[in-house]
Length: 295
Image 1 (cartoon, rainbow, N blue to C red):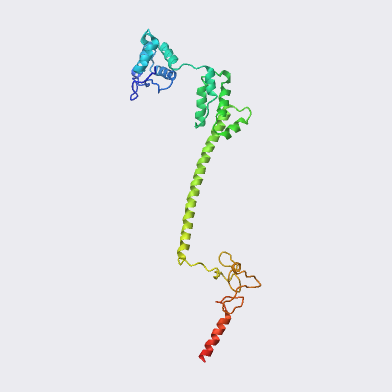
Image 2 (cartoon, one colour; image 1 turned 60 degrees about the horizontal axis):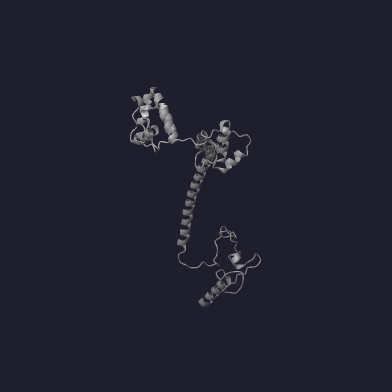
């Protein structure tokens, strides 16, 4: 049978009426052994020394299903004819049967930290070890399983490499690495957030520049590879450090000019060394023709 609670909405009546209370017992409360230990503390706080009062307090905190279970355990006697110690023993043997120490040790050495914090992991091992009857080996058993069951492989490797490491040292170092790992995670998250913000700003700037370039040349015409590049202060280099021929003023790379020979051919006079726009012969011929026509 399973002991259940009467109600979880309100606390049980206080023992002795002093306000020191305890909830009704149920399967969700946890171990009946732990519950009875807490009840003993309530008796202490309320200075309850009469065993018959303790029995009444226990019976009224089991609920109807719990009382039926207790009655079946006391048959053929009634529960109120037993002492508090006898009723406690009956409930513990029925609801918390003691497993063998060997089975408890088997479960102990299979425990893993998982997602528990280091402090919670240590507490869990200490509670589990209390049922294993390790004796003088208890501290070493907890230390070994504390290290073996760690979720962090780097921390586990570091502790296993040390000689004569104690539980206190292992706990302190594992706790320090856990805190350092958490701090590093927060720093990495902060740095990643800063990079995203910087990238977004850079992207917006690049986007504006691209839009400006596109808007500047909306004619759809293909750029002239022979067009004259911009020069600054008479330099032979235009924008983008492009080398320019000093004679034809065009890109050296595009026209394959050299310092000693210009390979650009004039479309008017047919000679090399200048472009049609820079042809001096055409200008001279035009002037002569104008003079003759005037005369």
